[in-house]
Amino acid sequence: MPDKTTFRLKFWGTRGSIPCPGPDTIKYGGNTTCFEVTCGSRRIIIDAGTGIRALGQKIMLEEGNLLDADIFLTHTHMDHIQGLPFFAPLYNPKNNIRLHAGHLKPPCDLQSLIDTFLMKAPIFPVPSSLIKQACTFDDYKCGQIFELEEGVVVRTGKLNHPNGACGYRIEFAGKAIAICTDTEHFEDDIDQNVVSLSQDADVMVYDSAYTQENYPKFKGWGHSTWQEAVKVAETANVKQTFLFHHDPSHDDTKMDAIAKEVAKIRSGVRPAVEGEEIEI
Ligand SMILES: [Zn+2]
Ligand SMILES: [Zn+2]
Image (cartoon, rainbow, N blue to C red; front, side):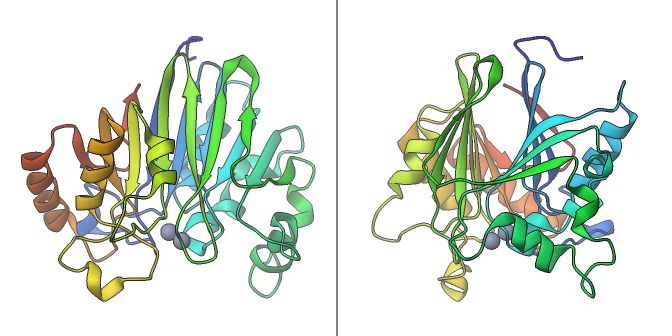
């Protein structure tokens, strides 16, 4: 059991776009995005990519196996929600899971997206009615601040991504974690939303799908580079930075090369590794 000042981040999925398990991605991981943030006895989950399945398995084995948690989605592109129907705690009616998304615009909302697309035949065989007793759906407006119990504050901010996305800043026990994925930088100016989410953060996770060299080929696709992660870390005075949303084509050898290169430029910046836990 975590004690009441435990503040911890765990990467359950670090990959962007599509899962890519296999011998070439074993070190940095093949599952798509999912974070578990522990704040004392509270649990916050960010994103429901394929990494959330293993988190669900862990929760099912915990004492009492009941879950009272908030799941905040950065957005609803497939790589961030495709694990949701495989998150076992959703099917236990005794659980209390609050699902939040801040990027959708009417007439689209989170519940109808799950009902009519993600968990709907013939896309998926299990209907969403089976998760309704365990969970609630909240469409908030990006920019909203959540004050959860035990002094946990979750700030939200708009990211630059096709169809919208929200970044998060989780504050607890005088410390802060910023999660900024998926987002594309501006070439002429630093993104002030990203800077304000990350200002003086103990940990920042930043979309580094590309490198400065290959970025021009993917301009407008909604992702950034590790070089921009360094720029944000410097501007916002971030202590520890994790490169994230690894491109599926970046195998362990490529990721090791990026890790080596970035370490020469700024200390405390490195690629996120699936399964790694960071004590804040
Ligand atoms: Zn993504
Ligand atoms: Zn996306």
